[in-house]
Image 1 (cartoon, rainbow, N blue to C red):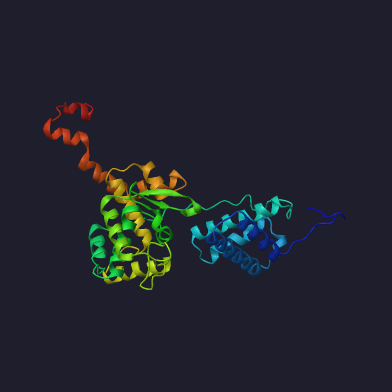
Image 2: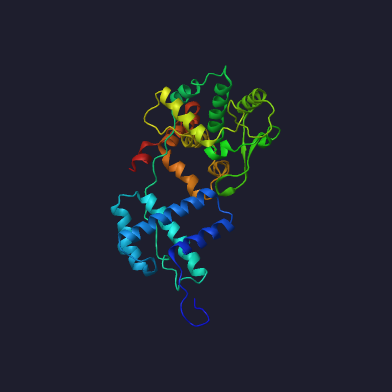
Amino acid sequence: MQNQNGSKISITWNNAVQFFLQDCKSRNLTKGTIRRYRNGLEKLYQHLVDQQVQWHELCSDLFHHRIIPSMLDEGLALRTVNCNLCIYKELFKFLFAEGWTESNIAITLKPFKVQPSFAHTFTDEQLHQLLIQPDRATFTGLRNYVMMLTLLDTGIRLKELAGIQIQDLLFDESVIQIQEGKGRKFRFVPVQSVLAKMLQHYLLERGTLNHNFLWITLDNTPFRAGGIRVMIARYCSTANIQGVQCSCHTFRHTFAKKYLMNGGDIFTLKSILGHERIETTEMYVEFFSRDLHIQHEKFSPVEHLADDFPFAFDESEVSGE
């Protein structure tokens, strides 16, 4: 882009980042996304300094031969590198569209192929140990117990759990409204009778306050995500849960596994979990393929029919003789 005199318009790194983040805000991206973009760009600038590269000297070759190798030498996980590459692509796509650069130098950046990480799930025994930890005779114990039941029965994310308002509980429809899921997307999550009864019981103990956040502290203030995270970790520690990540997301994985094991279909699971792409949901089938095979052995229609009506066949047909 040129000014009226025909000379190039220069832009500093700070201005480039500032204009990009302002554009992100204007597109109503979440604070978490913007914070992640800012952190990723700060790390890119540090790599430029370490490699003694001026930012306006950046080109596709420098990305491929110096910046990316620098990130790998730092020991960053491939998933982290891929996240950074996505951020760089967004920045330079914006700068090119706005005319601050003559080309999109990040257009050739491609993510590394990463094997899906193992989805940790709780065993039935671990779930039992977790659920007996809260003292339900106390308000906080009841609250924590119902929160863990909600995580297990719905598969919602930590942020979604913390953000539930009383008006989001639609008992007549047997659903919870998730007003702002990942990507600020709205969805309904089914609630079954046991959880519904426990939520109603908790509401009676909660009482009426001057705000509508469902989960509250003893001071009647909203129980935030950070506190919930600490609570889950503490229960995992006291229950001596080992060999699995002790987090709210493990409840989410456990819900997905049990849903599939009990015969749930993948398309409904995608909707419940709020996945944007079916490929994300399909990863659960890959993770739990052995468990699903064992489950199929238990409930195979032909195997069960054979118990009452043995199938006669010629063994030569099987052996190929």
